[in-house]
Image 1 (cartoon, rainbow, N blue to C red):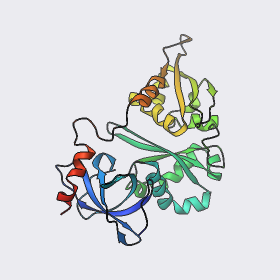
Image 2: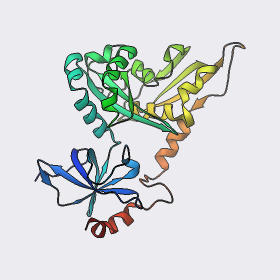
Image 3: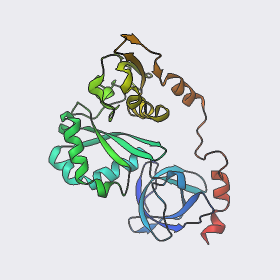
Image 4: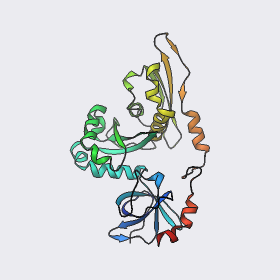
Length: 279
């Protein structure tokens, strides 16, 4: 039997869908074999609600002594689904999917996907027309995607800072053409975070920031670049208070990773009940 490793995307079936628990219990299939470990898909890591018996794909997120934890939100899963659904476009346009980020702010749900290869030199508008060709199919697996041009043929490396055009385009669907000016300090991801400051007309700032700065945070996760937006009142000719995610990034670094929201049953509790629920 093939060993499961983090990031591996596998077909599986919902075995238990207990509405009282914050997780689904899943059977994983690898080369037509069923793994001998219990698999858990936390409901917060599932793209939608499932019923017992439903087939699905998911990626291995973490492997513990007692269970395999799956996710439908980590980049490995999203990239695999994109490669599967857009396989014809991948060949036709020379598309390389890389850099994935998702946004969930209330009822707003979408994701951004960095596009490289020959298609990485195409316009945002043309890439969106490609995305729309299979929008009904891809949204079965991931939120509505925005294809972000990478402005380079080769996929980016962590040892090389992302090019400034990609750093700016990652803020889409914000109207990046409205940016007045910017200053970019590139830093390889292996050495720390780069920084970019953008001067934007006051009325467009909400589009760049997103709800609770979600758009800027997602761009940061895709580029390892800290974003600061300086609102400019073009009528009065003055700058307003900057909007930055620098403090948020610092808090994210200090905050221990928590995979279960406060008040929800933790992974330990779920694993403790696995054997009983699996029967």
